[in-house]
Length: 193
Length: 104
Image 1: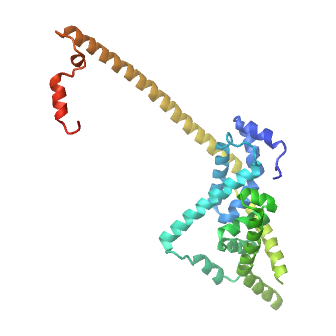
Image 2 (image 1 turned 180 degrees about the vertical axis):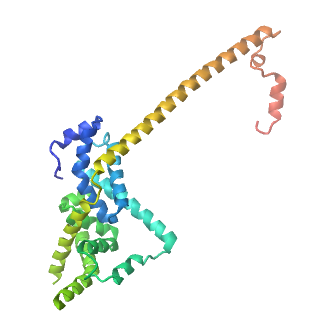
């Protein structure tokens, strides 16, 4: 995978020796990538930022074990995905406790609002992403939000490239099923105007 | 139509990714470093506490061993006939009582 910063290995070894400025450089370089991944999986909010902080803390703690076999970007993204999935699991459990097995709250939000007027494109995408199964969501986020290649996505998720490709296309289909009605409504609205 | 929807979704995913990458607070890196500093301080405190506890226990153990040694030599000195059991306050009678207990 491509390195985001120059002399990444040098900076990592400096950070490993306790150089905080070097580690800060790593955080600043990978923050956008981590934010895209976590916000894509969890949606925006303070929880996402907490997971972001946890991601870098975990990376800092595992610097001594980081051998550089994969790039720092791959390694950090993996941590971010794992921590986000943990949060999703916790959310699922608390949802089950408070709302019973099936939670229709999110479905209701989407169907009640008028997409043409109130939902911005990003909000619509975010809600669409939250509605598709996690395995498709993660792949779409890595491919289209983080702009990783199929090879890079496969490396991050430790999946065969074929699986990544099929998940991308199935994920897009699922997202289309959810979003197409809203796009149609929006088109109608603009044509009527 | 479907191709257009595909492109639209990809375009919106890119828009969302731009929004997402700026969603962390501006002092994010500083916050992470502060947390790491706090964590390291806490860990250092714990290590110091363990070290001092270890030092105290070493002293207690040494004093205990010394007391035991003094008592041992005192018992040997005042005893009429020397036996290992008597030196460590374990007479035959005590052994018999212990044997009666269900544990043995």
